[in-house]
Image 1 (spheres, rainbow, N blue to C red):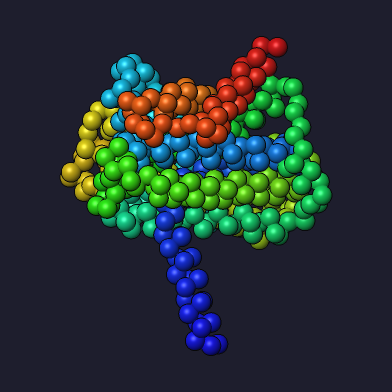
Image 2: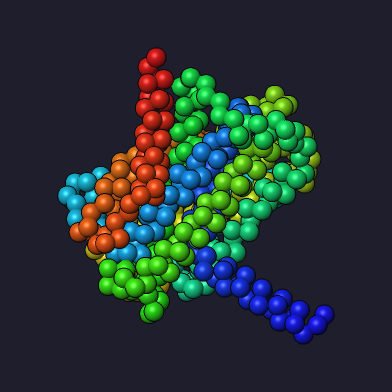
Length: 431
């Protein structure tokens, strides 16, 4: 290899490293979107509806990318998360209603995710499920509370690699690609409450309120941690670079999320649906059902993926709840703070995780909770997105960086699509 070739390779490697380093809240947000609850939803959709539901991933990509970019812009522009802006510019009753709904949805989601992780670990190693629930819950809370912010972010980035387990499972599956691509490219709608409930669950797990709060708060956190960054209201000259980074980060994160979701749908459609196994309600059930059809390899990587994605998603779920409540109460918040500097914030984070553990001991069926947590997220997302779109149109909040143009249209389209699906589900229950 010549000196010139070595320099070119070094330059290319350096550019790749710099690009990866610039990825942050968007990548982690996108990856955490494929949590065990989401895996269960995608597995159920693929098993019940086959390849015909694949088109929803192409539909949701521009919608979720737009709404997540808008969320990130709120945090980067104002230096506050969504809840922080709500408490400064909107009535208290609205703030309390949204934060309460978010905390309830997140807590149920944490419980469902921990239950799915425990079931996956039990399938692989045996032993009591509750022991795994406690171990995983403790790891998630201890990691996010006691690990330094920079290291915590780095660990979360590395955990995104666990999602490649579903690509491996897909490659180990015999997929009829012509049928799969047709399902992904040609929309098919069935006018039934079951279809719309599944659609709400898919949209609820891909466009979830906790993702909005997390990404906005992490952008605000980065403003406070990085001395070179200031809120765009104070440093408008940083806007061009900031918005370019946010867009790249968000597009990569959301594309990654949807590719993995599509891989899960294709895997379960090609195996479970084709074999007539349509009654799949959890990600662990999907992993177990794969073993006799697709083999031990697909079973093992599918189960390991559930654990890996749970370790990524639970801290994000608990963290977003803590950010929302902490900002609403105007407490010191932030993962970059030492625990003694933000006792109430970290206590809320731990409480969300502990309540999630408690759900696994309650009479609530974790299988139903896993699926319905996605439906609840879909219902809660409608008012949250509506308020967020109104918020980003106000010069008083966003200054000259109000969201306009195609990004604004896509944001409203995302809110409208979610509202339409929720309405279709409700109407279907009474027709």
